[in-house]
Image (tube, rainbow over all chains, first blue to last red; front, side):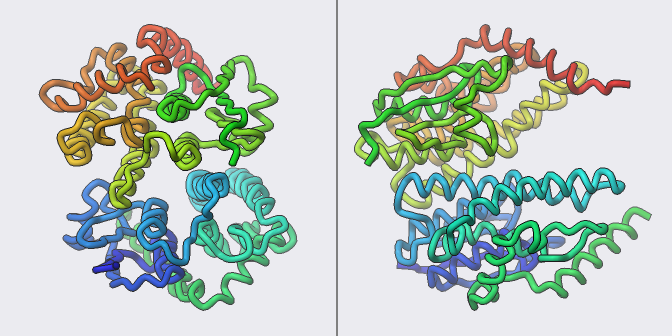
Length: 222
Length: 234
């Protein structure tokens, strides 16, 4: 059924990586095009004129943008290896938690990095911890967010890999095994799965990338 | 299946997001109990219990199961009451397009409109208008592509995109009235102007769309409260 699937992505974008993971989980062959975000290609701009962002999926010349929209599209178009549950209530729960991760947890985490001063950072960190507690609760009695096998919500929660267990930001730990044992265990389980590992943002490469960007923005403003 | 069980909606008459859930239930001809939350007087026990994460409306309670977030609710309604008219298109690319525009409205367009309420001074408020107009021109184009000459984004009947966008028409009209602006216009968005009339007159919509004047009065009250809250206490 699949004629031609292209994914315009960027290796450091967790949204892009999510879509790659979903494609691999569902066994959908695709062509990957790495986009240089500082110099976006004409195809990306043509297919996603409104947001001009990655990830962008193009299937049979038709574009699909926004990672969560793409995940649903993949599941509806390729019915094998479904990542969303079948039951409407379970689907509603998966969508609810997906939105929670993208609309609450992500912006709150970004605030930690953007905080000016220790007090602001501690406050932001507290908010992140409150939200992580809520998510931790969702793992109670389950192997994965999606139940016994990985699914939509585990794919969307790839953001959590970014947090890096036990690492500190300004002397504060975002994610610790002491506070969030189930989330940390979930991360350990997931990174043992080959396809998940293939879609993880490589730590050292990412750290170098962040340093380069910080340097570039400093020299741009001086 | 819970089909014959109790259906409740916790909401507020002024909320466009609550309207989405009610329009969807109306399309499916589902009987439901509507419970008005008086948000300025404090949230009800039922709301806090059903939506502990966000403590927000709308909440759909089906049997004993609460479902939150308006677009999640609309999709749930479409999937559970599958024998009624379809809300989401059947083609997966068209579904993706409908979801894309719903996300655009919720993440970009409506948040921009809300900034008018907080903007200090007429100039600041008027600066937002062109941004809203730009978005509406994009939606006019999208309407042309999605409707394919039919009355609604969803074709012959109201669909997901109509609901996602149409729910904001009350607030859009209030914004026009209070800023002396024409957001939907003959020259820039003629198709949407006509679509708006059709949407508001639809049987599934007309009883849940608030009157513009009532909404305008309510808006003045909220803006006063928001400005008071935003004023730094020195």
